[in-house]
Length: 158
Figure 1 (tube, rainbow, N blue to C red):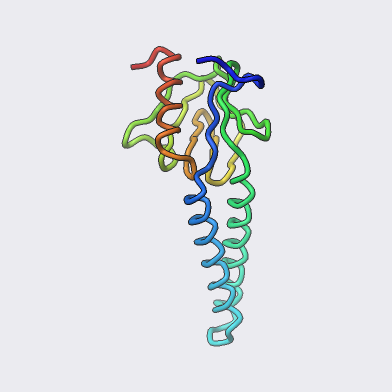
Figure 2: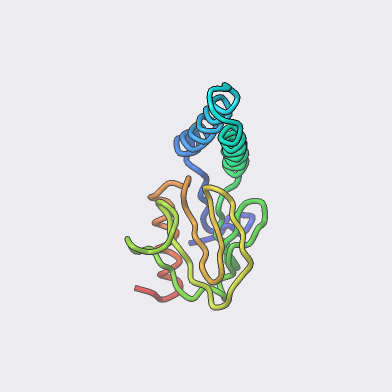
């Protein structure tokens, strides 16, 4: 596989349908919780709790919307997102975990790194905790499966 003019071997962008569904659910849930909290039919403590949960859901919906503008890019040096955040360098990847019972995002895969990296989460695209990096969520299943198989092949896994 040859890279494009920017050195990118593969690029995966979020699926429009998944983005729409995720953002719609978060905004609907947040709006509904805030509406119930402000209706005056429940106690003050419950109203405050529902209002805060509604605001949190609206905040996460906005984070999902913003993260949908990013893409995952595989280069000759690393796996990164289009904003420049590096998920993992090729030299740090120990294993690709794409099994049914693997701890990974929906329609995605996980990478096991040789050493722990910092925690980070871009909703619907990727997360990193310790030695594990998860890629997927709002990304199309076929493209993430192809990227995972390419990574495993290049790393010499079966």
